[in-house]
Length: 202
Image (cartoon, rainbow, N blue to C red; front, side, top):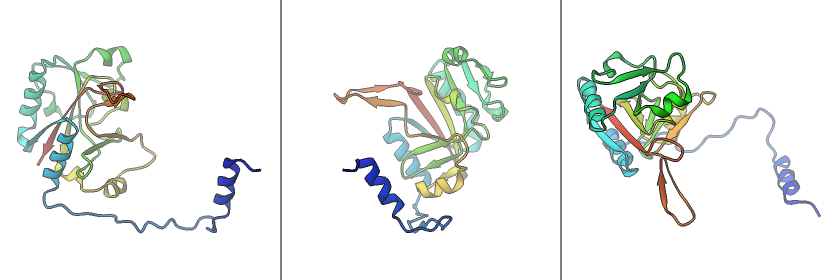
């Protein structure tokens, strides 16, 4: 009698698909929304994240307000983040050269941009690209303030995937870090920031 593993593999081998044949992607690739930014705002807030809608000119002042509200004194920022994000009254730690784990663990938070945001799922995706830095700087600090620009927002997951490069280190963020045990007791901050705050610019 064959094992379940052997049976599954034999079924896969029996699939009649020539090597190199194109993968059929006949699923829905695009969706529309009457107000994609409002949808993102609603869905991100559903995950217990804090959301602000701001204009481009308001970004520095809102960053300052968010950090002041948390009494954040030491904050990590990617080396290529806009200078306007580095507001006064805060000790900014650039991740260039890369900060040690102990340094990241001692800061009050991190401010980054993102690669793309998915309105339907309230998900923010980082790929270590512009103004995002290394993955570790958004996983160790207990607070993450993320700036999302209107042109980075798409409605659906397929649209987001079309914008991303699969070989890059992708991090999908849907609200603050949280997990539940078998008793469904929610615990936050286990494998990422306990608090996520998002500025939607546009």
